[in-house]
Length: 147
Image 1 (cartoon, helix red, strand yellow):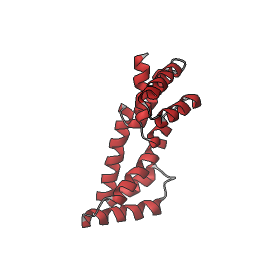
Image 2 (cartoon, one colour):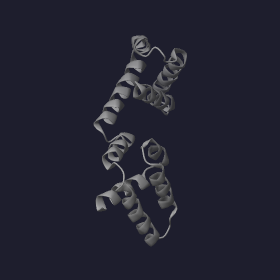
Image 3 (spheres, helix red, strand yellow):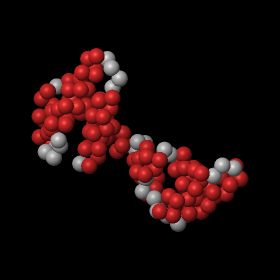
Image 4 (cartoon, helix red, strand yellow):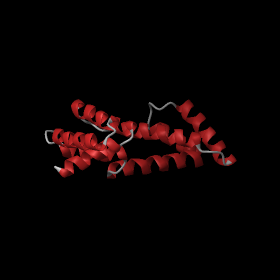
């Protein structure tokens, strides 16, 4: 029971964007939202007990796996992160990498990608904040996650 409450607390503590990526039953998701709004200590304790109770009726292993994937704690999520970083570095350092990437991912928007690579290179050369590099990473992450 305490393990379920701790797992519930991890879900409550997640940022909203990450929580959306975790596959949860709608009823549990609603109660997590309620727990975020509760202010008093006793009400929070009761709400966490209720969340633990709801979690007894669901597949907890699936929730844990989904949570690990959403927070980047799973081996697959870490591997994806490394692949995205490698592709980003290749694309920024080597013009041939763009051709290779577009060959492997035919549905990718080549014009947008080329413009983003150029902007990221400019940022890197000028030692500016890496806004375009982050956007490129996010785009690669979404693209490689789909495949």
